[in-house]
Amino acid sequence: MKWDPRIEEMPVDELAQLQYKRLKTLVYRLYSFSDFYHARMKEHSVHPDDIRSLEDASKLPFMYKSDLRDNYPDRLFTSSQDELVRYHVSSGTTGKPTVVGYTQNDLEIWTTSLARGLTACGIGRGDVMQVSYGYGLFTGGLGLHYGAERIGATVVPTSVGNTERQIELMQDLRVTAIACTPSYMVHIGEVAEKMGVSINRDTDLRTAVLGAEPWSEQMKKHIEESMGIRAYNIYGTSEMSGPMFCDCPENKGVHIWGDIAYTEVIDPDTGEKLPDGEKGELVITILQKEALPMIRYRTGDITSIDTSVCPCGRTHPRIDRIRGRVDDMLIIRGINVFPSQVEHTLLSIPEVSGHFLILVDRKGALDDMMVQVEMNPEAFSDKVQDIMEIRSKVAHILKNSLNISVGVELVAPGTLPRFEGKAKRVIDRRSI
Amino acid sequence: METTEYVIKQISVFSENKPGRLAAIAKALQDEKINIFAFSIAEAKGFGVVRLLVDRPEPALKKLADIGFMVSFTDVIAVKMKDEPGGLYDTARILGDSGINIEYSYAYSGREAAVLILRVDRVDEAITKLVGNDADLLKAGVFS
Image (cartoon, rainbow over all chains, first blue to last red; front, side, top):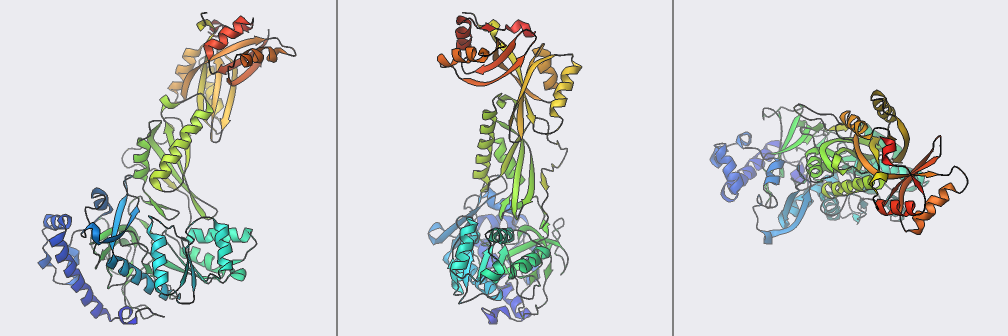
């Protein structure tokens, strides 16, 4: 099934023409209305007239996550506030969040993109879809919610947490599809087992749309076989709008709709565009975004591109599973965490120092993040209770800043490793 | 009354809860030929606080700090108890009647008597009350 076969099966050359037309319009618009991007183009001596083909996109300067942070909260916006209908907020690299704004049209394009993707995953009218992504400032919950409603599915907006109740509702409301992180899916399977519920036999669940964190082909197989469901991959970052693009039953990569986005994979060191199949950094241009246009946005995600036509008939380019990060960003239970953000937060707490180590494990199915931090000697008290209070305080402040709960271990000054040059502050022991 | 002579400097050491930490503390004190009269460990999840009464507190503190331990002095008092039934009651009762709270305490049985080491919320008042009730307090000089 295809949501919009005319677009999804558009001949490759026609699609390229459409992309070129939209890119050109976007560049002219930004050059005229975005002080930021105007200045950046001038810096790189590029004028909109230099864009004479789709390939000329490579002349355009990149945008980075730091651009959003440096222009917090809304200085990159090209729509005025009265044109916006929503904000989402995600964590930034230094404790400062990044804000994404949406016009009605932006929501429309996001929703359309998901309607196509969810349809490709075999979901539609008659399905009951449980959205177990967080609702709120995070883009996952509301994004999938609107996409699922658009295709006529019945949404159960469970958000995350209270897993036993989620499983009860899954049974009672005859849920057939779910959207969540892959690790939460595994967790649901484990909790169900403890409750004596077999997802395979005792529920109607048959489709899972999983994303917001990297996961492997092996994990997909495990989920599919242990629960008797089909698991699909969904990709997107808040800078693009949110989770936006899905794969299809062919399992040959996530379709990035060409009419919505122009996709490149580059060598992160040289910035050169890489050919099909070669691993590099994913760079995305969202072609029709109004409130917060992103041109050649460096996602930091490592993948490769396949521009051949998918056996499902869709002509749009596909990207492989995300293989890692260019920077040191961590994804913990679907939430982006930057070690620099942890450092920034810890430095604001007088009882501890900036020397820390992040240990990431997977406990059962769920990510577990532990921050070891050195205490300041002045804060040392002979009373155990006082130290426990410092630990609670640090955990509380980190939770507020990172939006996830993390464990905290206080250690004596000088006991954590010191670094010359680039610090290695993360030990990630997860195997996915 | 003058209470300072009864205020004893206890060394408190922060220690991660892992094998070999106590041995490292003990080794450091042995190297400095420092004798430990009494000690206790308060444990919490992931860490502990080792508390020590030693014969030479200043060099002990310096040595432990030098090898990387987080250390501090804590004021405690030491009460000689009769090593017989009711000995602890005599001391605890005086503090309880005076509304002084014991934050923690540990004891050792010495050659001459049993000794109770106390950290209380109001040190000076505790000393005054105990001495006033004929309790036998050890003087700081005993430990240095």
